[in-house]
Image (cartoon, rainbow, N blue to C red):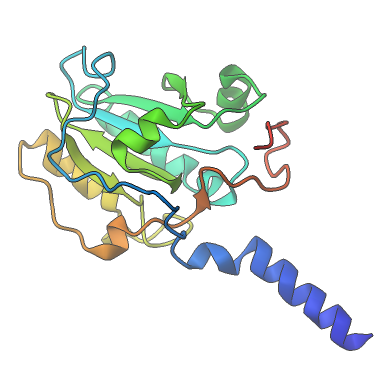
Length: 199
């Protein structure tokens, strides 16, 4: 009985915590998108500003942990960069998600994962930065710390600073670009309290 109890606790710990410390498995048929490649999304770059696409899954605990950092970046760089929150298909309205997580930027629903594929994103939370011409400038993690608290590894913040300064894309290493978090096709329990469509 004790063995079953500890096995169950271990499984729950793995399911809720430890698996997010490991890189997200690369999906079959994944096609990498190189920095400098044009992302076909002309409507997003119409303003003439660079674009930050925040791939956010309200049902992913990792996405919820970086909401505060994302909002801080949107506030700091909002005059220079167009921010969007990109949601996978959900049965919750974007308005309900925005209200629940205090997201103040425009929201896009990427129900067929076209935008995610165009940017090479397969997990959340991830950011994709596009320059003014729609070329991929950076794709990767917000931070090496799950809770986005390590200033030395604030990858998206560093990339944004370089982008608005007109500098080449920074080389931040595998910790910045190896995906961590929840797979886009993955569904979990109702972490957010919002009903989500199961795939």
